[in-house]
Image (tube, rainbow, N blue to C red; front, top):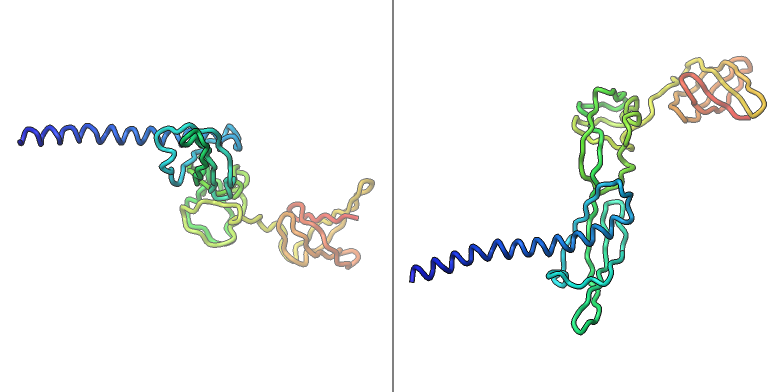
Length: 231
């Protein structure tokens, strides 16, 4: 009797790994088909991974897949929904819905030390890290030049992943500062001295006073102590 029990236990130990391996192969088959389909809408140079949320029972066992289409394209979080058409009983097609999530391998900049609102980010205060993200890559600066020299909009702890909404251009003109006013069009360029009536960052429109005419005008900050006026 003990010999029979031992034999049964031995057989079970052999069958469990095989069953697990078969299930993994079935899952890999479906994931590969979905990944190849979803990848077509992305840049081939991007490294993406598609993970089905749930694999319906109808898709296990390597069904005959007729077609795959999108019901909902991947959104900003990478969430999407595919329609998989498979051959059912009596060769009648059957529709199966598969929710999935897309993650992309990308690089992000991480602040290595605590930062306070208004701090200027230095080259040695950030590090590059590889990670997988599901939200929009445009939120994360892709170049070091897009980070270094910017200022923080709020206090953040060290280890924070830097995002574009967290950054601001530094103040290049202070209130009361003497500035150069450049008024130009296609034919003529006129330069004059002025005084800034408010502080400004690159691209800001600020009030300045022409010190020669005492006239107040609005100009666009185009550089350190330089304001451009169109006419």
